[in-house]
Length: 387
Ligand code: GDP
Ligand code: MN
Image 1 (spheres, rainbow, N blue to C red):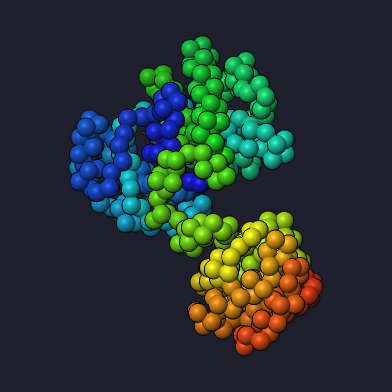
Image 2 (spheres, protein in one colour):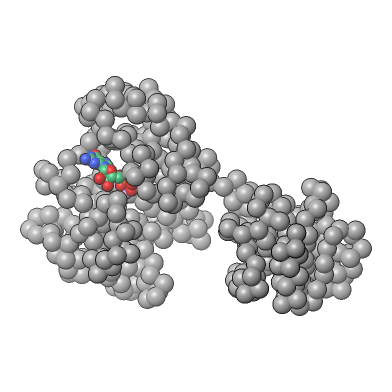
């Protein structure tokens, strides 16, 4: 789960991590007023669920409240396209107005899960800022990674080693150690999958400050935090993902044209691999989970059909707890409700598969049915290549 920079900074601040003074604004007037409170000189920052805003013109330095107002008027409603938004971009509806800070040096610091070591890991670089992705690609040796032992947690001597590695000394080095320990505590207590400060700056005046902040919460831990759902900004999310989460379905948008309805993450992965193997491109994957009702299956199918990239649907279900007749009825209900004309290939097996097959074949829908995964994949890929 994503949150905005200004929310991430509130979270960091509550863990004792220093952030610039600032406030979120919803109108250009609020931008101007806040700029005055900040003493005139300020930064106006687009709040979208993506990074790379600086280079896309989403971060503006303003020398006075009038300039801030201008930046506000220009940014509200603007669609920002950055390497992280995809080609359709994201609309700016909130701006963060912050006191401007004189930067001495920019660093990169984050904690995230490292899948190689199955551990949380500190990532740090003395060359932080807007070119970190390029640095990672061209000079990976300038980025340090330190896996954290989950049983003992982050120790201050380890954090000190990282801070010294960044070239920090004396008081600032100790401030950075404290900051890293707080960041780790934040990451654990708030169930984050990522906490990132880029840039972490040492100001001209010689203080550490989290100038930008990004936090992702672990979706599987949201139930432990009652305040998380109300932090969501639905204007920043794919409407289909919102509908999917309302029905407790896992839906992931991909780039191809074959909509996929499956049950279970493992089967989903295998299905995507097979489609790729046969030269197909999945448009999404939608996991209906273990024991879905007919209504949920229908909702899932409608979500797939609403994605305009989808030119054909492949259903791959193993009915264990899930009953194949329920799946079939869900598909039939959804397809007739929205008047689906796309080719559909269904591969099912398991509980009440004969009943499911009978329902599908007698439904009058344009459905191809098969017992075999390879056969089904081949069919849908071929149908789309021919159309
Ligand atoms: P991102 O591009 O989406 O990661 O947005 P950031 O919040 O990181 O801002 C991009 C860049 O703007 C930073 O790397 C800084 O160099 C610059 N910037 C942001 N805030 C300030 C500020 O208060 N003063 C100065 N001088 N530069 C800033
Ligand atoms: Mn940044």
